[in-house]
Image (cartoon, rainbow, N blue to C red):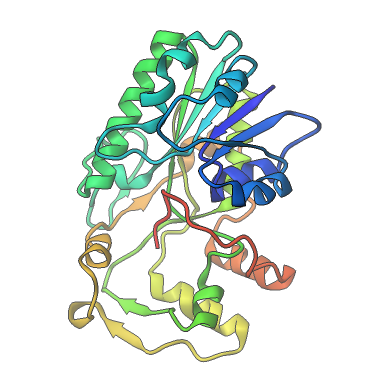
Length: 298
């Protein structure tokens, strides 16, 4: 295997830290300041501005066998395809592509369960762009005759990005909207799922999400109990002073099934938020790895 990650941010670095043996892993970043962080995650950094074709990236494509796409699309489409579509089609050794998407593509289902057979019905512009990018990568994979795994991720958390960090900084909120639930996924489980699917060259759509969709205020309360501190007061969503983006996020309510991924033999290390928060508190690494992912749901 030889892996190239486009957009080696929070999820890509989790993938790199789980590298087995001497598998080469390269990853792009827009900032040279992040080279040290990528190298610490077993990733050879490649500087790419997200726009122009780059000779170092082109050289990596000559040897890559597995491609991981963790770069967010925008109004102009997918940046990787804009810059490197023809080069990816010509990559001589490529045999698998993994695309990191979001469960936001399902839209709102009033708290009902969804799975990979549920039609996409995105509500936000960002989720619409994700559906368009999924389709564009599917078209490329079909033209290249390689399997494409689309990993639809729920709200990402882990070291540096969790309720402990928010409680410590004083930004944690306990917004209460009756009946509202969200799924979540620990960054390490994203990395492990990517390796699991890549090593088997598995294609298809997979929800990469935990077992337990839960009210967001419950997560904050549980984290506060582990820290031995009082949780913030509950705030009624109906009267809360929220940005339009935050309010729209709560407009989507669904329970996301991970049964298809489990059927491939994958097992989550963190199947629910309590298991994950227990481990973060016990291991003392909850402040580490702070960063933002384009797929993160806060």
